[in-house]
Amino acid sequence: MVGSVSARSTAVKIPSTRYPVERITLPNGLRVVLTPDRSAPVIGVAVVYDVGIRSEPEGRTGFAHLFEHLMFQGSGSLEKLAHFRIVQGSGGTFNGSTHLDYTDYFETLPANALERALFLEADRMRGPRLTEENLRNQVDVVKEEIRVNVLNRPYGGFPWLKLPPVMFDTFPNAHDGYGSFGDLESATVADAQSFFERYYAAGNAVLAVSGDIDTATATALVERHFGDVPARPASQRPSFTEPDLSAERHESYVDNLAPLPAVASAWRVPHPVEDFAGYLPYVVLAEVLTDGDASRLVQRLVQRDRTATSIGGYIGFLGEPYEVRDPTALILQAHLPAEGEVEKVLDTVAEECDLIATDGLADGELARTQARMATHLLRETDAVLGRALRMAVLEQQRGDPGLINELPRLIGEVTQEQVVAAAAALRADRRATVEVQPGRSA
Image 1 (cartoon, rainbow, N blue to C red):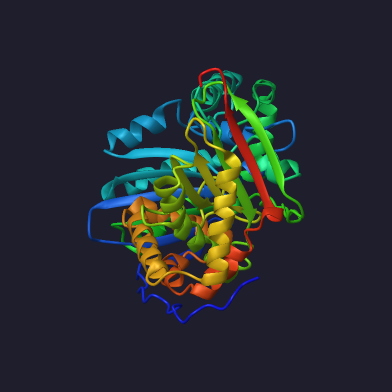
Image 2 (tube, rainbow, N blue to C red; image 1 turned 90 degrees about the vertical axis):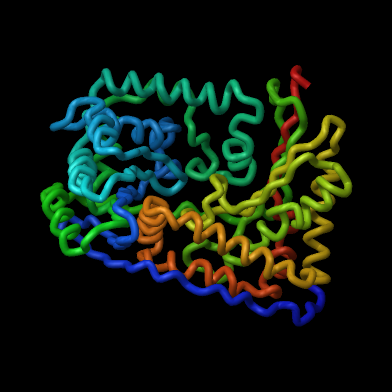
């Protein structure tokens, strides 16, 4: 039961940023976000497609990530590696990444290379070069990535691959987003073409350009290069909602490469888009519990009790609180000393949450956390590419890229009472836990 809370709940005054935002939509459905910043002759260009790990069909685990690789293998008008040469030859950098709810492609370039970046992104939006040779080559690349990052690494896939199947029951939410070798090897060019046609339509994408641009000139260039990309029906994203847990779930597995035990727990949180006001207190709570040496669980578990060697907390299995849809979770993960006891760690987490729920927060605890979070937010979007990427995803998921300006202020407006209520909701009967037991390397 939540006890009385003192008046230490005054909101922190954090000002909004003032990044300009201009939005247009082309006739083919492509949404465009422009945010000029003439302070340096640099631009960030990001294209976000509304397709991610949760969109993969059964029997094709890892396909969203595999397709991201295929988008760099040339197009109908450019040979393989041309994209690399053009961007790097222009003094720029580029990459792409696959997430639960979207896939992004991006470049940072000198401002005078804007048209080249727009040409390249429009070119592969029309159609990547999907050949048997490219597919087989990239399947091998992805398999090697899995070996390096998961199979041959201590704690590989912990907890982002190991915890979802404990917490969730449906394939979209629970399956291995990196993919099984069997599913990857059985993928066909026809599968890739079907995936492209379903998800890589202009109407399923957002283009964001940030930096040293003139908006009228940039708009004309966008229309020139993307305007004739054929319009195709945008895929309708289904709901991936699942009921909350009604009883605790706890599983363990042996990691033969792990030298020490580890544990991660997750609790469902409110809808990050439809109930943003109810969601933000959990984002703040994760930081109150684990961010910095002064945080509650670092002080208790690491510094005082020494029952853990490290503790971290965040929202979303990929740690992206403002770029994820429902369902998602607050996650706490800890590494333990050789003789550490998982149950002691879990009991301590429960005790600290109960203390917040009954006694509230210490003087200055919330304000300190909010100020640090606002600083992190401002740093993440200070670079033009970080700004373009966040605006593109905010447009994609919320239709509101201007929320980027309000996030620091909204974090500062979260009250102690809201954080107390969030802490009270982290009950054992709503908890999913996965435990790593060290194997022969211990």
